Image (cartoon, rainbow, N blue to C red; front, top):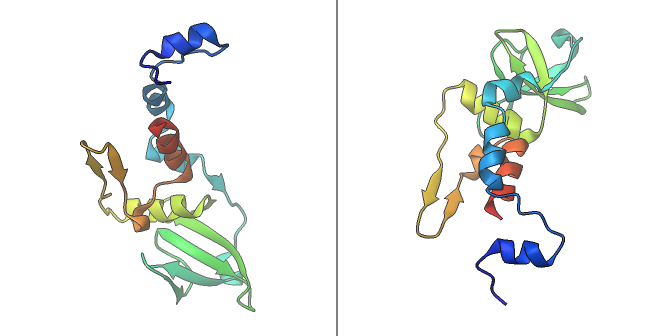
Length: 146
């Protein structure tokens, strides 16, 4: 049975019509700078005690002690991976977060433009796999899509 009026369902069942939830959700999401500030700050990392790989946009490449903003893998002397982290050269801080979020942040800080396409006819939003958004924003998109 198709129902064109959501209130008709709410009147017959104990359901609350919350209205345009996607709009409300979009209004409470933090901007990218606030999201970055809320990432877990990994204090006490001494870069000279670890082996490092820098993410170049496609893969991790062995590098020396990190000096520029970006995503890095931190390994012990036996090359056992310990953490994947985002390094902010401006604040000299290390941050932990979801992989896609850290990768997005690295692209964002390099000034890469985010490629998003919305097809009005099919109501389909596409984002390249290599530019997946941080998990918080992806979840919001999924929830808003119904």
